[in-house]
Image 1: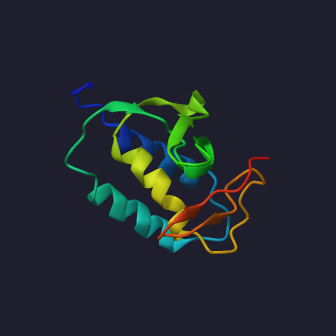
Image 2: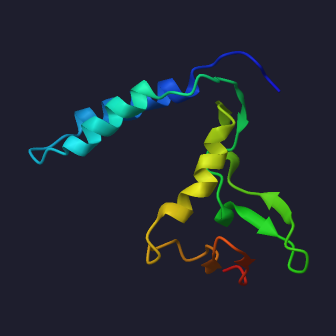
Length: 122
């Protein structure tokens, strides 16, 4: 594991905040400005750097049909050096989306917090 300080979360917050600011329209979203300010004030003190996937989520995993163990992690084109909690946050994201959120057709069809049922791949 690489143990130097890399500033990954701070850099990404600055990049996405600037992207948002550059794309503002007449319809202001004060909540976004409050969110940006809050995030800037709550950057994690721990700034470890490791290899991260960058798009880690259930539909980028291949599971064994019988044991449901992860056999492979797909789509490494967004991998980079960054904070190890980024992949954890990505994998938790789906639990905060509305239940009717339109996933891509090849994603897992049924996921709950208690257990996972896997369907056939596309």
